[in-house]
Length: 265
Ligand SMILES: Nc1ncnc2c1ncn2[C@@H]1O[C@H](COP(=O)(O)OP(=O)(O)O)[C@@H](O)[C@H]1O
Ligand SMILES: [Mg+2]
Image (cartoon, protein in one colour):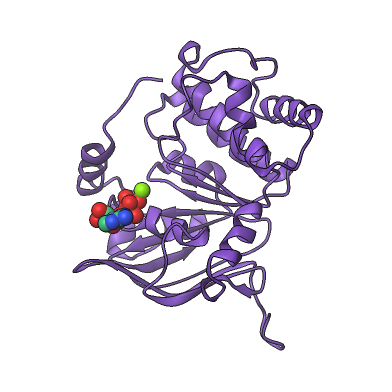
C-alpha cells in the first residue's frame, strides 16, 4: 500500500544491497522510475546493472533494502508478488536467444501459451500485431536461422511485448549489433514506449543509445547511483567517473569489449 502523504513513484529501489559471496555488487542503490518514462542505466561492465534490474522481476532477491512497484513493496510479498509483477513487466535479456527449433511464430507465442489465457485465434493475432510493431510483419513461418542478428533481436522484442507489458526492461539491447541495427533498435525502443505507453528501463553501455532513448539517465558506479538526470546534465557533469564514461575512457571500453566481444549482425 502506498504510504499516505508520501509521493510514491511507479518503481522504487530503496537502499538496495546485494552481494555474491564476499563480492559486494549493490551497496545501497536508491532509484525511482516514473510511469511512462524511459530511464537508461549506464556504468562500466560488471558494476551491477543487470543485477539491479533482475531484482524487479524477482530473479534475484535483495540482501537489504526494498523494491516497490506501483505502490506495493514487492520484496516483502514473496513469490506471489513477483508472479503478479511478471505479468506486468517484461524483460529483453542480454543476448536473448530464440529457440532455433521453433518458427518465429512459435517463438513469439511461447510466453502467451504458457499463460494459457488466450485462444489460439487470439494468439495468432497477438503474434501478428507484435511482429508488426517491431517491423517484421509476415515473418511467422521463418526460422531463427534465416534471420540476421538484428532481426533476431527484434523477434525477441516481439516476444517480450506480446504479453502486453506495462514495463519493459532491456538489458544491453544493442550490444553486438552493427550501427544500422543499433539505430533501428533505438528507434524501436522510443516507438514502443510511445505506442504502448510503456515505462522502460534500458541498461546500456552504448552512448548512442543513451542519447537516442533516455528521458533520464542513471549511472551506477561501485554499488551506488552516482548520477541521475537528463542526457544534457550527464554531458555537463563534473563528476570524474561520469566524465570518464561520457568521454569514452578506454578503461570503460576495454572492460566492455572483454566481457561481450562483438558479433556480426
Ligand atoms: N548470479 C550471480 N552469482 C554470482 N555473481 C553474480 C551473479 N550475477 C552477477 N554476479 C556478479 O555481479 C557483478 C555484477 O554483474 P552484472 O550486474 O551482470 O554487471 P553489469 O553491470 O555488467 O550488468 C559481476 O561481478 C558478476 O560476476
Ligand atoms: Mg549486464
